[in-house]
Image 1: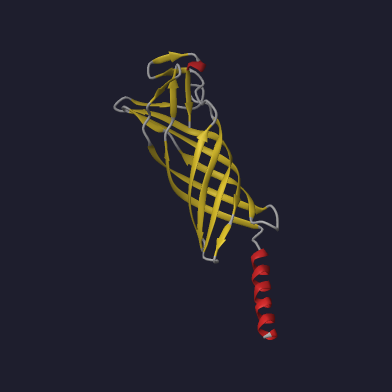
Image 2: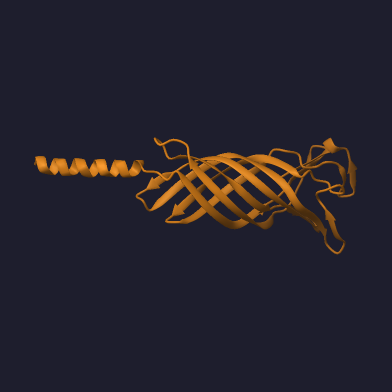
Amino acid sequence: MKRYALILLVLLLAGSVRAQQREKNILGVRAGLNVSKLAVSAEDMPISIGWRTGFRFAVSDQVLLTRKLPLYLETGVDFSSRGGKLSGVSFRPSYLQIPVLVNYHFNIKDIVTIQPFAGLYYGLGLRGRMEFDYLGTEELFGDRGVLHRLDFGVRAGVGFVVKLIYLGVSYDIGCMNQFKGGSLFSYESRTRAIEIRN
């Protein structure tokens, strides 16, 4: 009986020691679908904007914050195609984003790891066009554009890791008004009269 108790104790200790050996640094490459729309309002009246499908490519790095918990700081670089559609006009901004997230790894029987995360992202508009049906295009960024290049927002979501495959879903909310002034939808306006958020 004592021998079985000793074997059981050794197995339990070995399992807990193994659970404490967490990866200190996890690098990843991610690619996927991005479904986005712009939140637009003019004179505090919301304008209904449709969804636009784009793509996202990211390189991520997760760094273990403490040995006692599977708590990680995640950062990296994302390339994200965003925008929206409105009656013959398609907004197509592309951003380079740097997220700063905190995530927690729930390991389920060494098969699946569930990783909820939350944090902030900072974005820089690289390229953007406003495409009109049959009327050509206009730039969204730059001297002649109507959007600021800098963006800032909140990101939350959850990732699922099966072996080395990462499947994730996230939601971003832009906190900065992207509109910098000019004519939008034939509406010449002051900067504060129109708000555009990712």
